Every structure is written in C-alpha cells, then in structure tokens.
Image 1 (cartoon, rainbow, N blue to C red):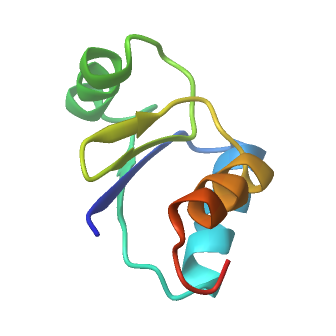
Image 2: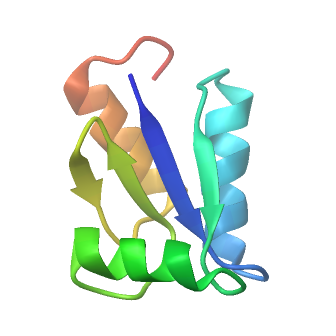
Length: 82
C-alpha cells in the first residue's frame, strides 16, 4: 500500500491522522503543503481542493479527512489492525 499524506503545519487533524498511521505501523510519505508550493499544487491537482489532511492511498484520494473517518475507511477496506 502506497500512502501520501498531505498536511499543513499547525493542523490538529493532520496531527491526528499522522499519529493514527504511525501508531498502526503504516508507512506513509508526508508532504507538507503550507511551506511547499509544489506539494500544495499537487494536493489541489489530485483532490480539487486545498484542505488537509488529504491522503492519496494507491491513487484513491481521501480529501479533508480525520482519524475517525480514516479508521472507518481502513475497516471497510479490511486493512489489518483496524
């Protein structure tokens, strides 16, 4: 599973999602968007919006989410540990 997590510095929902993924031992690449215009432009191109946290999970975009919604997503997909 390939996961890109788009975040912004100071975003508490981003912190929650980062903690969830790390706590479950799920590898991800974080791309901070507030201070990196290339990552921000990529976020907008992929998701059509500017809000974070947004994830790209194997090409599936989960925009403007939180830890509870992401947990439900992983349970629905049958990801072990959820």
